[in-house]
Length: 75
Image 1 (tube, rainbow, N blue to C red):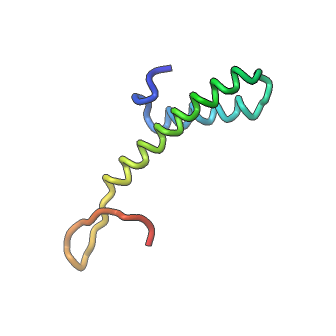
Image 2: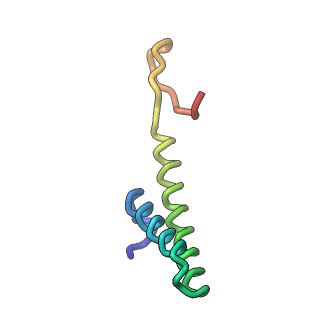
Image 3: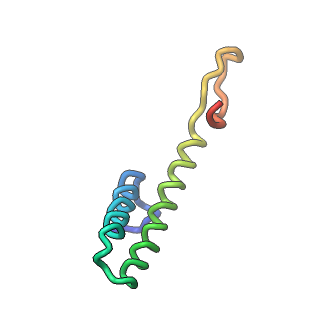
């Protein structure tokens, strides 16, 4: 697998889902399960990073001012 920092959101999420399925199966030993879990944290962090970056790019149009403003969450 390529470097986690280079994965798209969809790729990181797919890897995270594979890791979750693997861990749910419970067939692997403790050592291998811990390695998969640790790797899954990297995929999770990549997803969070991409979502944070996307949120920063989202702007809302404010018709009262006639301009855009940063999106600051649900109101």
